Image 1 (tube, rainbow over the protein chains, first blue to last red):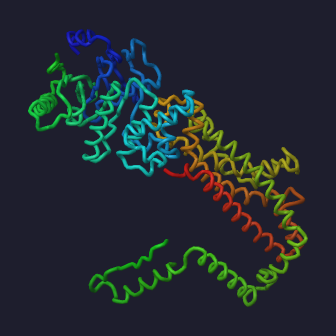
Image 2 (cartoon, one colour; image 1 turned 30 degrees about the vertical axis):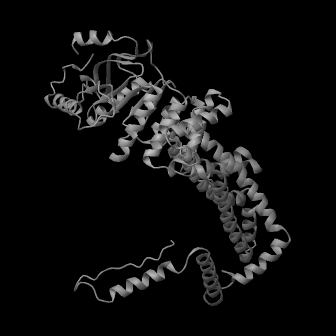
Image 3 (cartoon, rainbow over the protein chains, first blue to last red; image 1 turned 60 degrees about the vertical axis):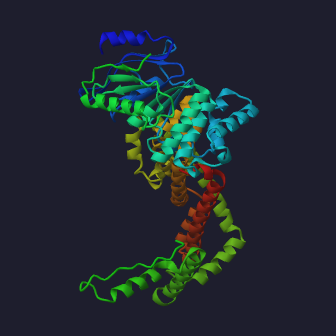
Length: 275
Length: 282
């Protein structure tokens, strides 16, 4: 990572989450596998950041480090200047496999309540929060259904409702819509953007789908292929949403990202369209 | 099965006789489409009784296999006098104490082994070896350790139960999806809360499977336990009937044990269905 880029990033004011010179390696029978090599990234409050990269580039590892489930081998991951060393409810992790992440023995409403009971919130307030958040994701009529009775898209919405009910600062989403069909995925994009605009949560969204990143993100962080994955480029996307692939600015951005991936010298850092 | 399936095998020209089709169709009728549910059970019993009656009347000495009618006649006074019920009651108490104790220890140790790798590493080899020691094999040492009182019976049933519950619980606990546990952590559940509210409910189908196996095992273990070191219970009834060469009483005891096992399993499944059905969904 060039020193100039490093300087530019650390100058970003009021970063909510900062990732500093983070590396991650795994020891495997004598040899050392370096997954992430020198990641520097600041994420601002309320920002929607996509981590974009091919499978196995370590983007999920990076997300799990921000969540506090994995530790960096060197470097620092901080939130509001404080080192992240365990999971906390201000950072809510999302999973692609909603069927596994939800509690199948609890109804939709009870799944949402799960996060509210450890907080000693009065029962009546809990009920209101459950009602409010299920309505927000359009599941009010399905409050008493079990996850097995919900479709894939509905399960992901329930995961969103359950997360928002505990009012986290950051949503960490690990390819949450990767298992959905393209049409459902588009609808989930619309819903997520609507909810994000309503709540102004910070979102870190992992994906390997370029068009998904372009449709959603304020900034797209492009990671190189592993091993020794690092940030190839950062694209600031200052385009109004919804972003249609037919709009010329969107098409140009898509082409630009694809070109960066194809030329792949991998070390260039770009801040396209930054103010 | 609730759907009639007629198997249709098209005949490959020349390789199979034309009658092949008819044979297959007739076989699938015979293989149980007409016999379903309670009707099949009744038919099974009627058939077994008929074969039993026939064998004991025409093929073997009725002393070796007393005919059903004789067994039934023997059973009536045994029930009327309360002998059977007393034996069942005593054996049942022993089975339940050992079963509940074994299940409890199996679940606690299983959770520990499924959650803590060090516990798993240390205990697994020992359990792999202990599995081959049946309750019967443990009788002599149990008598020396606990005497011929109730404690040794509880211990033997416990011994037969806990390995099944342990192995199944461990497997269920290890299988809890990482994502579910991490979600619970993010939602603010404590470490203990995760065990109680995430791990145990997720592993419950496996725990129940282990307990059903354990229940069957405990009925198999109670008999030798009571034959060698007891003065009451179903095993004792079998033992004394055997010593007096009363085959009709032996048959009454055998039928009682199998019916008792069937009822226990039925009740167990009923309780699971009524109280835990939501945990059995995947």
